Length: 209
Image (cartoon, rainbow, N blue to C red):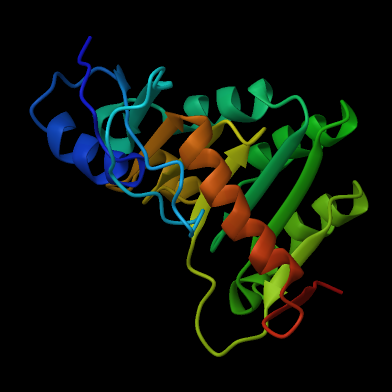
């Protein structure tokens, strides 16, 4: 177990570099962190002196073409949610993953999705989004001129799942992609705050009709 006082928001890029030197088996790592609790911007924690009881950070990652099956890590993250799942996904057309999200909704988890408006118009993704909407899951798309290119899931304000993996069959089976799941309440809350800002931004995002 490595215990290093790293900045939460640097963990994702750091572990990706480290993991290339690790065995091909899916990995995990635990560490402690130090974050400035007095930062005025909750979306961008900053490095500071060690806190008396720094939270334990758990990292799990899966490379698609290494046979790590990132879909299993995604399923585990979704299954672990008890109260909320906030998902920002440029592509979401994987039918089995959609079913897992619907199952979470049925067991009482608050599920919300933000996706890209142009991708949402494509038939495969449109069909998946219709099934999610039918299950009562609210979906928003971007109104701004850029892409909604984020791929991030926040579970219970406790876990962030992100990386190059999106919610497509190719990404989860044949592409050179990676998924990183970070169990860290400080990081997760900062990302959840960002999701909330996007969700409430009526100028740049709207409900998918």
